[in-house]
Image 1 (tube, rainbow over the protein chains, first blue to last red):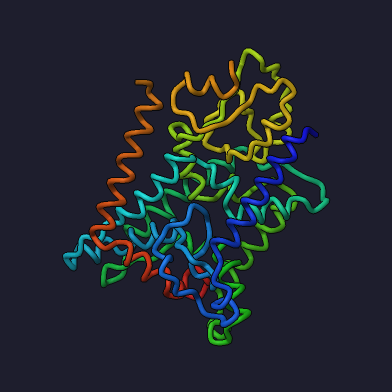
Image 2: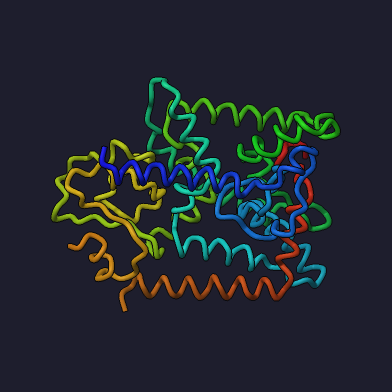
Length: 298
Length: 46
């Protein structure tokens, strides 16, 4: 392995650990078993990091988005113009700058998946058809159901958080249940369901690479739409590419980057760049083709 | 201007505009209020 490759691997791991700790800095709340009241919790973090994790100092953009949608009718009925513009804009800004870069470099749940995948067990691929499930989950559980299914007062529920999100179960549910007896006493069927899903994902993570990112994560799906326009981009010099598929072999989401450097599945981990024998893959914050060419000096 | 560059600036402008409009409408506080309250759905209670 080249020194530069090792540096990139270490640098990315440092980013992931630092982001996980940085997004969950309120250790005092963690020790008390309450959730943080930090003033920064109005900021949408560029990662799937549950804001009910006791130590979280920022908001999960997915939770915030669902809550904006599930209270939209109530707010409009009450004459309040709280339309969720700030949350949508925050998601747009994250995507426009980096696309899915935060998935590969900042997301605590991404880090967890990578660490669990290191367990020496036989590995299997995620079936390709399951990668389309994330669109269904985004449309129904994150957008439509929170917006359309409401109670008599006009308020709905964050369906994805409630029925699926294993990050919430792990960071908030398990932690708070362990630390807070009052919460522990209220756990029932829903917690059992969510815990089962979390365990299922943990097992899947051990045998498949980033299964949650590839089949479920609505945040990654939203950011993935921006891979085609984001300032951060991957580039492949096709004149130098020998189609050896070394890139696909190390890719955590099993894509051939030379076919589509802007693939909505690419989490910008740069592993492909490190193994490319002809050094034809590159990355950078470049907008125009001319600038992109300067990345490789092509 | 290339298509990608054009779209980047369009999305960047829209995103910043939405954030500013949201902030002016007091949405930062709405997000904060939700984030500092225990989310029963996230935990798996209700």
